[in-house]
Amino acid sequence: MRNAMFRKAWPAGWLLLVMTALLPTAARAQAWLPDPGRGSIYVGYEYNYVHCTLLPNDQTGLFYGPYPVEGSRVAKGEHYSQIVTVDLDYGIRKGLAVTAHVPYLASKYVGLYPHYPVDWKNIDDGNYHATLQDAEVGLHQTVLSEPFVATPFVAYLFPLQSYASDGHAAAGKNLRELKVGAALARTLRPFLPDAYGQVTYTYTAAERALDHTMHFNKVDMELGYFVTPKLSLKGAASYVRTSGGIEWLRGIQNGILWIEPNFAKYRVHHDRLANERSWRVGGGAGYALTPRYLLYMYGFGTVYGANTQSIWVFASGVGWNFAAPWART
Image 1 (tube, rainbow, N blue to C red):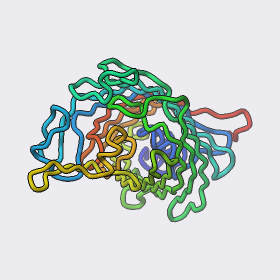
Image 2: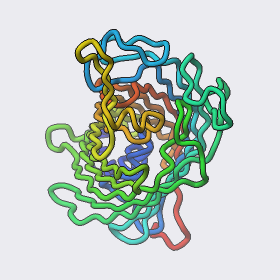
Image 3: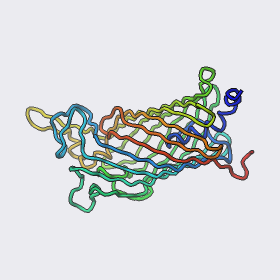
Image 4: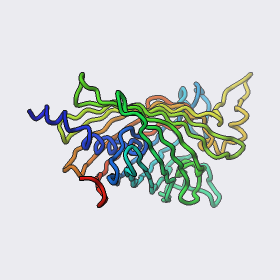
């Protein structure tokens, strides 16, 4: 009896509450939207750790600063960041919602290869440097509800303040970005009545910087399962492919060190202009204390990458469902 009642009722409230909280990006690119006048706020904490840089090919024997490359990986010290995030998800009218995301980040680098060892721009001095990072606002419109839920969206990302964008401890790329995409999702009835799946595609165009215009293609895949009406588990995978930037290429030709021309020219800005290719996988759990309050935690890591960092993330936080006075009961 409990399972029958649960399967009838859970897609409306529990699904939205848990799904949008398990990963912060889900709240900004989801297929299911809140009802008019209703929304959610999530406050989270993230801890990020990077040890290895992932190069686009085997560069064994070469050195990046004092660090030797092993295969396509080089350990260039330790990168740490701690982030406090605030996310808003609010229904404007039926099938239309707005989202917002604001992060406050503190990052540091500990190692022998700082980007700026002597001048005033040095943020790789072993200390934490904190800043407001990039805010994002988005608009989502559901265009199909059966047999799948299909929700296109558009979003705009912009720096909240100027910050250093070059260096291991850089807070971000300090660029404005326009994002368009769509989320496609459905429950897995009748095979797994208490589960759902979702795929989200996002295309991002960044403002031109240093003679380059970056384009990002990203696919997010997720599968969630409600163990009980309050406890849910989720697995997720994310693929990113970037174009318009540079490859982090070095090599030996005829006994002479060869460096890819764009990498040589823009070496100081290689993080900002990276042609990233990566797969990251992870999962999490959410527990609804009440229909209004939820606790969540998740983690993910890099399983493949080129022109990027091997990042590992752990996060937790709390979600709160709210209703405006004019929202329907």
